[in-house]
Image 1 (tube, rainbow over the protein chains, first blue to last red):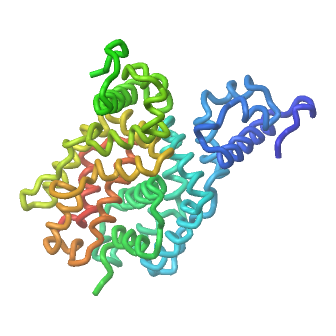
Image 2 (tube, helix red, strand yellow):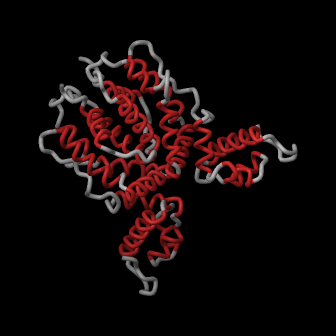
Length: 196
Length: 196
């Protein structure tokens, strides 16, 4: 949905969308290190000044695209079948497919690189993976309070969610696969060892 | 310990050390994004070709410095007083001081940025924080097997250690403080909720 520079003046919202879309495409194609404001402007059909009027850096553009769900959006909801171990296993398989696939892995590393520039990206990356509201990892863990010895009243739900997301990012950084064994171990980290 | 370029030919090991040292200093001073082979060569008093003979990228130099303990070395041993909750709390305070101090935070973000370029750096960053052998996080958790309901025989020690390290990196990325509350929560993630 690039806006042609020959189509005349565009409305701000269309330009904003075109810029975000161009940034996402180029992030996926070439990675964060090789992403440049000039290239984004050219693909979006806007001038560099237009971008600098709204964002102060490339990482700020990525943060906004993450916030709007244009990257990693809507694919990572945790199901709730009543069986928290099964639900986390299902979710981790889905996360593994999105984040640690050969394509997604490069994207996630690019997002992590953007996060090292910009704390907003770090927070939004965490939120994009762990979510908020219904379907979020914390919400699912909260619903399981009392059902497992490791999840008593007052268990540190948000920190468990953060540790899981951190472990996933560390796997993306070290190119470790998220196989069945790793998934079972992460479930045990979150809700305690399987009952004998 | 820069080697002067006017001192004539230097022995390989001295040059290697000078290059690693220059890379570490410049990483701390300006961050990973602004680190350049040319600048490292100049500070170390060697030619760019000398660097490219041994390393194929700046991230490979950082990986080697991490491996040799020249970055994050020897400061993160987990004590063993017999009380795993107290030991993890002590360790997390020490880690917080090193990693999430205003200086260390920038360094850790730089290391994470290097890791997005180079999986070796990711693995070595994890090893530098979680350690190996005696004093390592996994070793300390393994010694606590059987002492907590959350750490039965067969508990996924390495994955618990990885989740903790991941949570710490995520905090560095999002500039979240590692305060007493966060430390207590991470201890609960690792070894289960405090006993009533």
